[in-house]
Length: 273
Ligand code: ADE
Image (cartoon, rainbow, N blue to C red; front, side):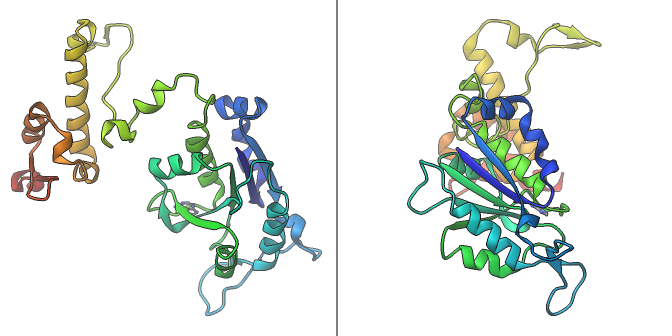
């Protein structure tokens, strides 16, 4: 996969040289290129920002350097690029929320381009213009505000690159995680390693019992309970038809019962908690 990142703070992306992502780059699985937006300014101060029309706090990024920088990236496609070009990702708090589903979609692409905004973001015409030429996705990490898109690039590249073949050694570790589709979008169960007893806390005996069926049942129960307590929004999306009677008994203990729409809903008592 080829990834181009346009930014005024290339140093922010240095962590992408470390660990599994760094290794994927040296093995040629990931061709990550960081490009400096300021190379596409033409004034003495290498200006990339200006005040917003209509007033308001802060500065916006000007469209001209972005146009030049992104044109230069699009003029330099990787060998396997699609006819429709790359996906242009623009991180920002007003984007669609980035999820594991987004990561899976992006991992199927041969080419991603990131435009890192700073200040109050980028003049809206940049996304509007490039949407006529490539697929543009504005993505948000969540409901909070960062200083710029660089941290989001770290997050998105890590989440996507680890799905590429050969980047993570053990393929099973991908499907056994929280948010993996194979686990119905539930949170992952807790995990333990040796020693069996630590600071007065014992590993749940079922895990050392060697009975695979019982281990699987215990893990499923834990995943359901955790999701009910921590992420009711995820549990509300679990289809009742994806559950067995044991699942439903555990969920009833957590205060969740099947509703008429084929999804679970919290009982009034559970909502009051
Ligand atoms: N830039 C600023 N805030 C952001 C957010 N929440 N997600 C992605 N990029 C951002």
